[in-house]
Length: 144
Ligand code: CMP
View: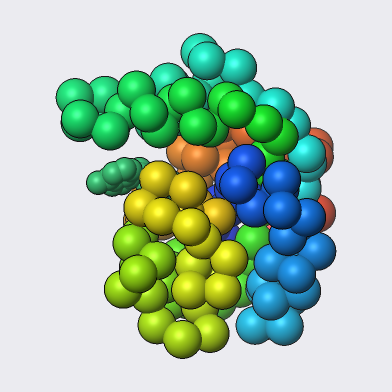
């Protein structure tokens, strides 16, 4: 059975443009419950660890610089089939190719400044939620 949670990050470009509210409204409007949320400023070590799977990619340095350039919102979103449904709501990584109505079509600037992150599998969703939130910080509709 597909999992019920995913981790999102509202990235520095979207925070800077005062798009936290509009993005959260879309998230709620599409049936996601917010189980945990905080506004933080990632340090270099955190960004490097969070994106460690991309360590060898040409865009890694730029990605870490960007993700530490300002505040981000991190949140745990809950819904049946959360990972796939949120990826559909985000749209493709490249906003130029994103479908109408998706978060990246509406709010992203470029491949790097793409407004939002979402977990890409249930397994990574678990790891990413644990990266930012203790169990005691979560208010789940699905867990006791
Ligand atoms: P995200 O979903 O946060 O996961 C990895 C991030 O790397 C991705 O969103 C993009 O912001 C970034 N990324 C992926 N591919 C490229 C690329 N070709 N150029 C710049 N950034 C990229």
